[in-house]
Image (cartoon, rainbow, N blue to C red; front, side, top):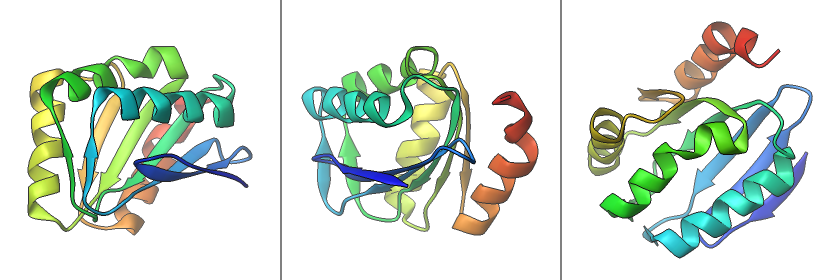
Length: 131
């Protein structure tokens, strides 16, 4: 798996599984410039191929309204089909819930308490959408 580190996360892309793994760094403030650089790294890794995303959101992060709006529109552009977030951090869970409810991303988004549930949803409920 190829790995890239951005100012907000570590990215690992498993091309065989078509899953992009994202680990958000701790105490990061995600602004528009950083998220654009982040999506450029995603495109470099995935080469616009259809893919699923598994995001470890346990570490605290902050993203403003403008940034969340930008993220919600990136599915069709980057090839993202679905994103599974997992986090036990209440503040992050609220941010993700707010993102899903108010920004209505153009790809499937679901939030889980742990990695196993999130990965299971991607592999069993979303995998056929990549093919």
